[in-house]
Figure 1 (cartoon, rainbow, N blue to C red):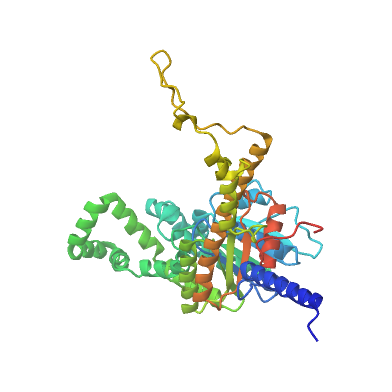
Figure 2: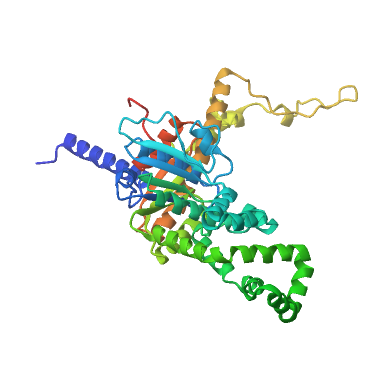
Length: 460
């Protein structure tokens, strides 16, 4: 008996539908999908660190994660180092400073709270000095010109102070979850390297040289400095300036008793980042440079035994008409824009069979009184139908550009997942504008949790 044609048709339709679902899943979901909600709701998760290269959306991601965790019952503080103050604006706060401030408008039905703060690098440094030095020595340090320059912008100070503030917040144990937005920098590794760099600075030869006179003490110290170090200090005085060198020496002498504390706290915070209760999220855009930096960071985290939760791929583009390829869209646009072929009933044959007055022997010769004017192609009448055709062609070309962009992003992401198949990924769509309120942060959080760039409309 021959197979039922209707059955074959239904079976083929099922295969086509399955193939479409597989293609959609391939585009929207990587091999391993990062499940955000279990991570945020797990009481064992105490710190989430959002890291990555600059300009990939770390601040927005950190804020969205904090809001989503708070509305699921956790007491959360978000620590940002973003000087643009976008976090404060999106949370409806006039300004953020070194003190956590509660965010209003959060759904607290589950018992959660959301607090936010922005790192004040200098204030954090001042707090360390005030907490670990007696009042007289603290006043001398805070008033020292070299200290003021160091605390305001010394290379690596911001990253180190972010680590200090994280350690302070965790030690207080006032929050269930701390979400950290790492400093914007050219290298995503600065945050991890800050404690080691500071330790190298404090243990460096220059510091030991500058500290030696103070340790010898009194006139003996001055004699030692003048005799044993005259050549070095002479060179430093010329390069740095005599007053600056004196300020540095005074600062180092005052800070001597605190240097060990800096190293101890840096080591403790570094171990805190390696603890099971910490989760790193690498944030990137689907672009070659950003994902190359993300891959480097993933490898560094693995080398340092730090817990990586996964990759947040921001600003992923999508299309509701993916079945229309770029090639077909461009071909359709070209057909609509060629009136000589499309608009004539007989096509090219009609053009060939039409009379050609210029090529005819009956064509009159030009005269001096009436010189021959250059002929132009007959203009196509601008009808409503032609206007619609032009608009449709423009839309088709835009769609082709979007499909080329989607293909490029897919190839870039596929290279990352092929290199790091162990890394779970969640995607967030490229939005038309910046997020500027809690509703926008909720939307970002929902997209983070679903692992899909596009979400269905409500009620769909």
